Image 1 (cartoon, one colour):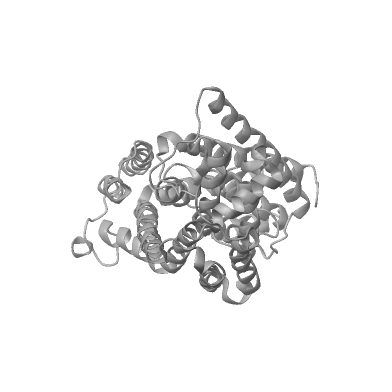
Image 2 (cartoon, rainbow, N blue to C red; image 1 turned 90 degrees about the horizontal axis):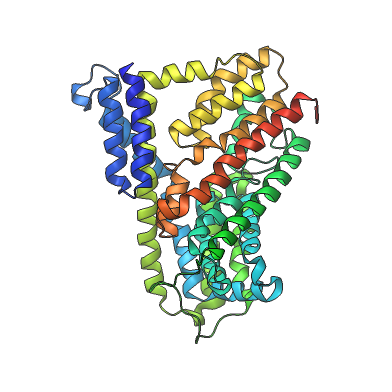
Length: 439
C-alpha cells in the first residue's frame, strides 16, 4: 500500500510542481526520492542488498542513458534552430508564407511544417527546435498570443502524424517487433483517425486562439525576439532549403542509420544554412553559443523527468500496476490501449509505455486470436495520449526550453490537443476495428 501511495503521490507531486513552474532538475529527483522512500528502496548502491534497485543508481542511470543517447541530436537541433533565426532564414520563410497563405493561415503553416518533418522521420524534439524560429515570426506578424506556440508545435508533431500508419517515428515501429506487423498496420483505420485528429484539432486550436484574442490577448514582444524590421533577409527558397536537406537526409538514411540518421541530417542542415546564407548572419558565433546553451537546458530538463521514470519503474507498486493493467478483462483492444496509455502516463513516455506493456500483452493477446494489425494501431495511437501529461519530456522541453513559456500559460491548450484528442482518436480506432473495418 505504501508503495502505491509513493508511486501515485510522487507522480501527482511531479505534475503539480511542474505546473507551478518549479525547476525540474530539483523537482524530478525530489519526487523520485519520495517514490523510493515509500517503496522501501535503498537510497544508495552501498546500502542495497545484492542487485536490488536503489534510488541513486536507478535515477542517474536513466538520466545518463538518455543524455548519452540524445545529446548529439539535441545539440545539433538547437543550433539548427538558432542559426535559422540568426541568418534570417526563418523570418524570410515566414514572410513568404504569410504572403502566400495570408495572416489567417499562419497557424496552419506551422502545423503543416511540423507534420511534414515528423512524417519525414525527424525526431519530435528536433522538429520543435527547427520550426520554433518560424513559428515565433509567424505569430508575431499575425499578432497571435505566443503562449499557443507550444500547442501548435505539438499538434503538428505528436497527434495525427507520430502514431499514424507509415510514420517512421519510434512509437509506430516498436509494436512491429512484438506483433510481427508492418509500419502500415491498420492503415485504413489510421487514415480515418488521422483525418479526424487533424480536422478536429485544428478547429479546436483555432477556437482557443480566437477566444484568447477576443479577450484582448495579442503577441507579446520580448527583448530577445529577432528584429527583422530593418535587416536584409535571404531569399525564401534559400531559407527553406536547409529544412529540405534535413528532411531528405533523415528520410533517406532512416532505414540504415536509424536514430543516428538525425545526426547526419542535422549536420547537413547546419552546413547548408552556413553555405547558402552565411552573408546574412548577424553573429554566427553567438548563435552557436545560444544553441549549445539551449540544448543543455532542454536535455537536462528532459533527462531529469526520465530519471524519475527510472525510479518509478523500480518500485513494487509499478510492477503490480503493470500486471493489473496488462490483465484487464474484456476486449483485448480496449485492455491493450488502456494498459499502454496508463503505463505511458506513469513513465511520461509513449515508447516507454509500449516497451513495458507489449512483451506481456503481445503473446497473450495473439494466442487469443486478436488481429495483430488492429492491436498494433490501437496501441500506437493510445500510447500518444496520457504520455503527454505535464511531466512528459517533450512537453517540458517544448514549453520551457524552446518556447520559454510556463506550464501555467501554455500547457492547457497543449494538453487539450495532445491528451484529450488522442484519447478520442483511440476510442474511434477501437470502434472501427470492432465493427471489422479495415480487417
